[in-house]
Length: 608
Image (tube, rainbow, N blue to C red; front, side):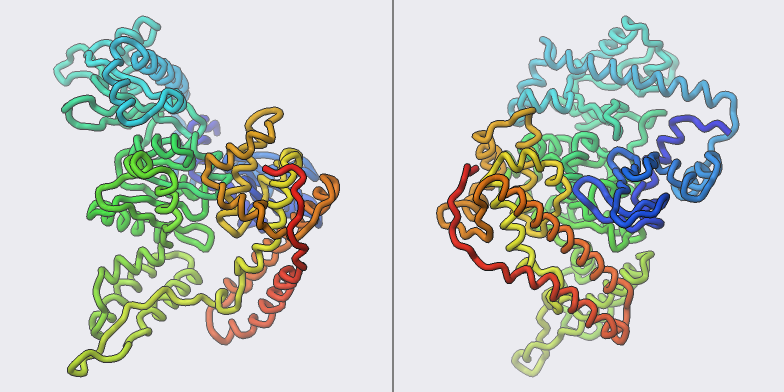
């Protein structure tokens, strides 16, 4: 059976490559990729990589390479049609009917990309022209600079019923294709089709590959509705795409963080402020498919909502849709803005750092669910606590991962059991709402940053003292995971600098770090009063120290993965005690790394 390319693209978009391969291969994240032992040949050192962003796997040992369909064919020995049918079932897609007309529709769909691209280019030219003056003034007032306008390909649709249609007709585009692309509207009375977008600033909407598939329009003046999107077309299903996803994906994968905000202007403002991992749904509540798209970019996407009732309702809808899809490797975090603020106004009025603080304070989904169930109640009576417990149980029952659901209820039962803190006058009991409990891993000291920080400090001190080392090691930096957030931000800045040109200047590194508000961290690491764990005598010695520290860092990540598996494998107290000794032994290995002697202040060879 021949499958249309669009159907195969839909399978690749809906079925996470890491999810399919992860059932067969134990994968560990290394920067933008996942790595593991190749399932197609015997090896002791991982050479098998999975790149979700680019949609392929590759083994540097045996040369195996392909997409999610190719993996299933190779792994299970399936013929191509059977592999496609299996994945289509996993994605909930009906197989296309064997219809001779399907090929004609596919050709039309392919041609529609040219139509939407031509429309996008025309909208851009209109913004730059005489008729776009008012739109440019509006963008100026909103603080959107010319570089950002070009980056997002922002355009303008003049207030004319036929301007776009006439321009496309001049390029030889048939009226029927304009209708299929959603660019013009056919009147019910059979009259001449007219332009859908009129008197609006235009925001092109792109698919994951960066191809223009639709448009959003923001009205100038009092025209209603304020925002108007393209209709559903052969290219565009608004519930499956995120605005700005193709631009945000590289930064999101590098930081393992993606931020979902509400609107086009929010995304644009954050990108212009340097928070380039921001995306937005297309004028509706987040759908299951959009959540899947977010999880392909990061394990714990941050949903950023306004601090009003509408924001609370949006958060509640997101929780409801996320619960049936949760696992130990995919959850959500929730950031709440002050009432009356949105990301656009936040970064314009208070700067990038204020927005970064909001995102850093995001709470996990478990706490968001607790807030929804408790609803601000004081929980002073057994009846109230019983109602909250029942509501939590109903929500948690929708989590398909049974172990994860157990952990959620274990957490909530502990909160509900922390009850009576003294008595009020008259003998009435007084309930104090509990803080989030200490988890088992935390009680054992597992994963504490106190263990990680000395080695992470040493790594960054070497790189900042010898910027040339950062240049030659920037590929290794892309796979470096640090547990200390402020240190991870420095690594991301070093990568940005190293990749900024063929031969970036050391003098530009300080500017790159300053632009990301990292001056204080740099001073802490290599400032006048900084204490160095290692004293490099030159770049060759620094390189040796770096390679050794990097090896230790990767060993720690492996130990953490083993610890997590040990914790996840047991759910009751008796079984937990049986693994406690194993986890403590792993801790001793990690803790030994804190015994590195402090060698004092080291002279900097060529500081950042």
